[in-house]
Amino acid sequence: MYDIPQPEVLDPMRFGSNRDSMSMAEHRNISDQLLRELRESCAYGRALWEQLDAVRRYLVECLPRPAQPGAMLGGAHPTGPDDISGWQMWLDTYAAVVSVLEGPRGDSGFGRDEARQIVRARLDFPADQQPTLETIERS
Image 1: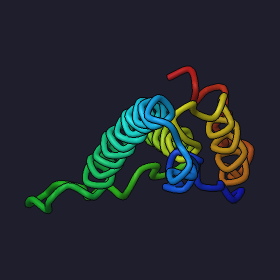
Image 2: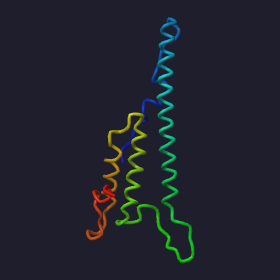
Image 3: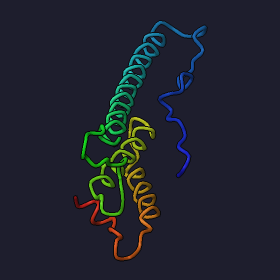
Image 4: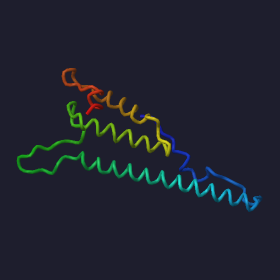
């Protein structure tokens, strides 16, 4: 897993200026730029919220179902080498989280590539039980 630096949109000092020596027109330009920066920060904040809400839902969905008489309990996804949908949900969730962590412009597929590497490393099952990454991504 690679470190992901915080995106510039989270840096409140990314836009600096010396207000004491500015003309009114420069103040207006700064104000307009600050408004654009605020909109970008808010859009990124909404994207973060939406993705974390999706992760919250995924975490609840991957818990075992409540115990009922005679019912088998499942584990968190993925439950094993043949749980193709569990692997796919994990891969999709991981890739989406990395993409939003990279910033408003996304990650150009880096998160999906990293998720694939992690899944490949974890799919170290006996050859007769081993699903392929291609099988997981096709489902």
